[in-house]
Length: 398
Image 1 (cartoon, helix red, strand yellow):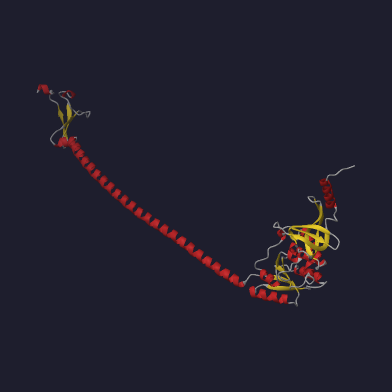
Image 2 (cartoon, one colour; image 1 turned 90 degrees about the vertical axis):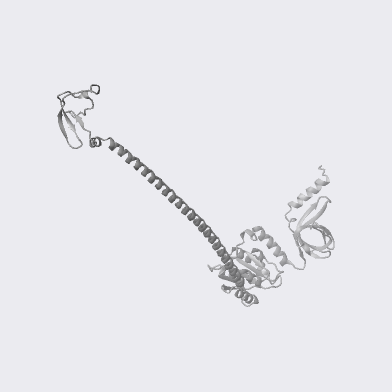
């Protein structure tokens, strides 16, 4: 025999419920009672029918919590679980819808959950819309007011663009296939920049073609970015979630897809002003640089002129000094030359002296160099003669 504690029993029951796939995907309709919505944002209530009541919890951020009120008839999606602290069977609700909407709303939520899990709503895959499109494809009814409104908005804001209508049904059983075909046709245009998918407001049933899975997958597969503009501000469709961008109304979508020519002109004027101001500032900076350079060059020229004048003064002083030294040297040279001339034999001879040489050209300076009877040459200032020595005597013998 196995004996469980209370905690073990409740934990075991909770595990059983969690493993039952049927009990993890329940849709239950009933009347709301005992509603409590504390500051945490969670909702605690009961769902009851004529026979029984089940406790429910709806955590903050779940879809449709604003629809809860005591006595409201709702359809809730959730999973069965056990609240172990009290041992209560409870329904963990993640979606609440008014019971009056019926199957369409349930299909919407189921498809939304399916496509979300497949990644069709991922923000990372959404493409940028060109800022200045040349060709825009429009998928809408050719006879409705939407097509007329789109043309008016685009022509008013940006008349340079070309609009290409891919006519389609926007309501009824055949509308989904018609929308898919229109998107496919526009994707055949090579230079198409963006597609605008649009329809005016209506009931959930009227807008249902834009909640069909085939339309959602056609938008996802489109090679051209798509903007969705379906219904009024309060309407929400699967196409809004799949499209690269969506707008609250067709007219707003038309404004999103093209720039405003007035805004463009204003931006061009502002850009021209910025460029002009930048050019003036740049010119001022360059002019200041040139003036600064010119001032420096002038200062350099003034300094160069001073240097050249100083150089001239130095050269002039050096030349004067050299000339003075040269004159002094010349004077000294003349003095030396005069002294040398006074000592030269020629000058001596001119004063009446004579030079006596032996026959071997030796100048006779002493009596011992000659003998009596010897022939000598006597050189005068002009000419000379040969003489015979009669006698020789020293100074002591005179």
